[in-house]
Length: 280
Length: 280
Image 1 (cartoon, one colour):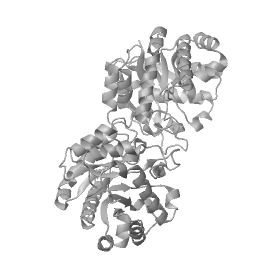
Image 2 (cartoon, one colour):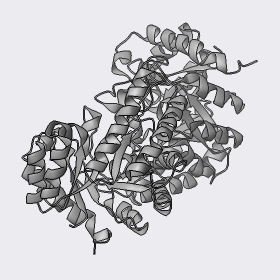
Image 3 (cartoon, chains in turn cyan, blue):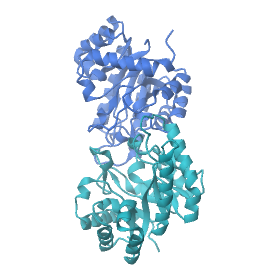
Image 4 (tube, chains in turn yellow, brown):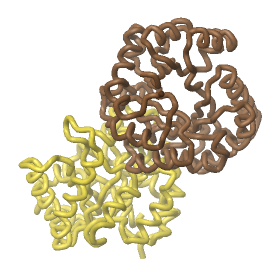
């Protein structure tokens, strides 16, 4: 299980200390962090906590939300993303996850919103290079296109990422968001060939869709995703980074942290690990 | 408003007689029919009813559900689709709408399911040609991929359709299902260039997504879709068929039929008609 990472959002109500303890106790070697709990515990203290626990930090969530028109709010967002890049580096994480953002209030212009996402990444490319951090554009399922992410497919994320240095800008391969795509296997291959897979996340598609569609994610094996074909496709690219499990699900959030960590690890070991290479 | 068609599903609880009356009374020249109410009223009687009312029938919903493994259930589905083709011809409609079907129970194999959709269309191509009916593959929004349609994008629907005679197999351009797609404009152009636009439906994407995601459709103008850019793209292809409004929405279903017909017609006139050519 030496490539598995538990994303902190899977145990949303855990404090930093509790999240690190649950991860270590489950024998999981890596953790994905979120900015809010890190800020609450303190950046330097969080970095020390995970380092002292012997954990890697696989990624930091999240930056992005780049679709606002030019103006003070957009400037504040860009500045905040610069801070997020610094935090990623301070935590020793390779990757900052970016969510594109949805349509501005009153707008129906997806094309314009997507252009502003590209422009924002262009502004941040130099900061990412300087910090040694990869910005990972996360395509979100098309059901989130208006309110959360105007970037919906892996191909579209790659079209964006490929306009920038591969050391600075990559993509998130999150099974929940992209499994439905008829082009998913060829786009995973394309992402790998270009060195653009910044992080790989495993999470199932539960049905029916939850009343709050954000919470429709499940443990691998509880839903409809064929993890084997996707894991084989990622492995074939030579991707050798951590493999995160990030679940937003009210029932799982209401479960004790040790059970969540152990269940996620077991599902990973059963459904994903057999098809990827172990770290040497 | 001489190209507008009211799909019967927008006034779901209306009988055939009520649906035809509401359409005529609103000054709408065309209607989209569904097999269930047509069967209840009688096929020949329904054909006579719409003909005597002076209405065109823009399409019949729906065939498809082609993802079952070989066996008696699949054979029954293919036979039922043959009957649906005959019904389409008997009603004088040019188009039978096909919904691909979701994953069979217990399966996670989207690739195999998609192959069975293609095979089923291959079995029906000759029937469609003989009947002078176009089979319209409808890509459904990716949130329906597991339970309803393994065909999710216009490009994927065209990849399927282009394996068959353009007189027999086309696609549905339904704004609700495809507006999010970064490739939507180029795929509309491709569909038009190949003579594959079998029907064009306008319906908005409401937010938040309804608790039953099937019912998240709205009147044009109530949601987040830019109808102008999509209408211009369809018009640029030379598509000259009817333009349907098909809404599944509990609140609209609970509204009196005359109000629904008038509202749909007004929204069409305001948001779509200015960007398409009138029939001469």
